[in-house]
Amino acid sequence: MPDILRTSLSGLVAFQKALSVTANNISNANTDGYSRQRVELATRPPSAFGDGFVGNGVQVATVRRLVDQFATAQMRSSSNQLGQASMYADAARRIDDVMGDSRNGIAANLQAFFNAWQTVANDPASVANRSLLLQQAQSLASSFQQTSLRLDAIADDASSRIKASVNEINGLAESLARLNERIGVAQASSGGQPANDLLDQRDKLIVQLSRQVSVQTNVESDGQVSVFIGNGQALVLQNTAVPLATVPNALDPTRLDLASVRNGTPQIITSGLSGGEIGGLLQARERLLDPARNALGLVATALTLGVNAQQASGMDLRGQLGAPMFSVPAPAVLTSGDNTGTAALAASVADLGQLTNEDYVLRYTGTAWVAQAGSTGAPVAVAGTGTAADPLRIGGVALVVTGAPAAEDRFLVQPTRAAAGALRMAIDDPRVLAAAAPIRSVSSTGNVGTGTISPGQVLDPTDPNLTATVTIQFLTPTTYSVNGSGSFAYTPGANLDLNGWRVQISGAPAVGDTFRVERNAGGQADNRNALLMAGLQTRGLLDGGQTGISESFRAAVGELGEASRQAALAREAQEAIAGDARAEVLAVSGVNLDEEASEMLRWQQAYGAAAKVVGVADDMFRTLLASLRN
Image (cartoon, rainbow, N blue to C red; front, side, top):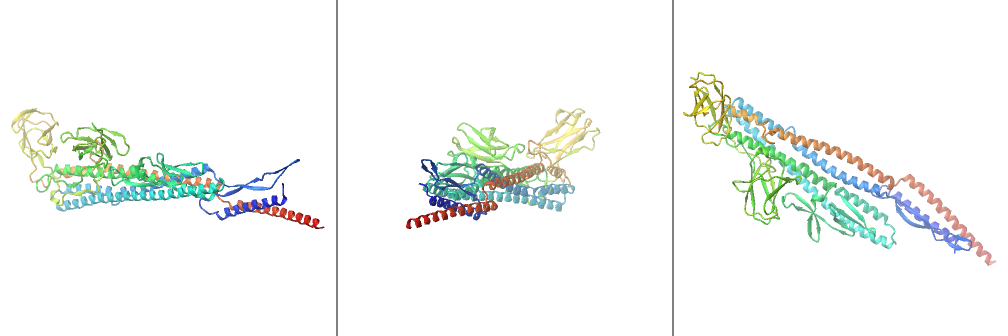
């Protein structure tokens, strides 16, 4: 039955709760992650009379959070993308700074090194010039080593950040699981009413988690939320957190993989993870850091093999063929920890022109060897059988297999990764620098024709007869003999290859004209090999003979510079998107103090009105009692 006192008291209680909610909004105006709340009022069930229904007042149906789920999802996504873009841009900038150091980096030292060879070519007999060249060579080797160490430091820092992100993810997952449990209990005990403050805390944790890695969420019927990452691996299952861990990569123990650990068993999920700071770190490692380290090693390898080959083709001040100037390690082959066979692979550079800055994963199928690019997984052709006589050949690398591989055994081939850090000087005596050519050509003073002979070019410095004297005598204007033997047709300007060298004879020699190719005895003033060394800077050694040493390094630096610029622009764009997404959320969920003041006044007036009705009910009751006494 309707009761004016109870009806007015229901208003007092409801409006008091509304005032409390408004006060709570005002108090949390600056609380990060807080969503403003609103009281939802509903009429109490009315009482029926013969002539209709009379209401019994008001009640609080629920206290609702003002949340736009779409805007919240957009903020979560933008936070995820910003985390990835920030980490990627930071790594790109740091790697670009290391590789592109214009003052005392590799580019400057490469130029100074080849300039020093030109200085030696200007005065080949000068020991002082040769000593300065050795000093510059040592500076160049040191710059490769220091650059490699700085890139290694960036790699170590990336691993540390990955570990820190994993620890933060695990902490957030554990907090989400505990919140899920509290939300389930709270909502069950309140008849399904939303636990608004706990839900705010959970949403905030999910946004923080999205900053670290891409997540998918699923809200269960009891209000608890499950969180998934990667290719659907569970991170939070209602009130249970599934931890992540970092484990050494099976092929490269220095490289960290991420694993989901359930029942103590790790499941590698690295390839499925994306987004957030974890995604940015993994992306920077694969797209920037690994290529930069390999490109640096490729230049170091090309420098070493090119300079050493030219040294071997020249003659030093002692009259000996030049000794190797630099040393680098052979290509690395890492064996998977999961292999069950006994195979081991020994690698060497077989073709510098085919060498790239790519790593390769080599796998034995049980009947054949197959390979794929380490960065993309694309298949790569493999030639050869793996024997010493017919090694496996992939990307300019030769591989000799010993032992017996088992099916699915894998190996990681890193042709150049370690070259820059291990580049060392192999000589310290300026007299062993090979500035001269080991051979020379001579035209007899008695020649009467117009024939001329080129200075000579070394093709194979290992030929045992390289410096043996060879006499070429013309039998007729169109034929000649070699050391008195044979009769060979003469073609002006054609290559004449013998004993590991090459010359060309041009013009019109006369009968009896004689030319000699002999050891370059006393050739301390000869600068032919020094000039070839100076020209090595631009000679095509890489990419099938299309790219020189300095050009290869400039290309790598240019690519990194462009990647760094694009990454910085992407981060700026994501910062703007994230700011807009947050503004959209705050437009709905943020506390507006002016609006809350208006709400406070509205509820205060309603409360005052209800209080007056209570006063009227009290007066009526008192009047009724007084009339009964009379």
